Length: 84
Image (cartoon, rainbow, N blue to C red; front, side, top):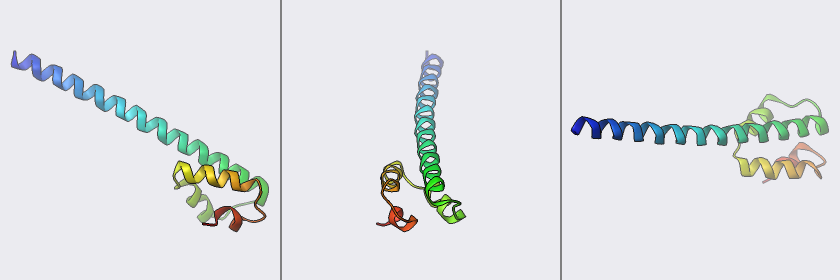
């Protein structure tokens, strides 16, 4: 009886961990996709990017990426995109 309860509990924990892992993976994938779009927009508009700019975009949160993606449309310079 105790062994069955432990097995069920372990299965539930594994399933919960699996679901959380999938959720995190989807979120990271979305963020990476958004970063790729912003980087592509920046390159098309301003040309080759410095490694620091690429790092900044890739390490930013999704809300910031969306903000920068919108700014690219009207920005005259990289500084316009990244202004805070």
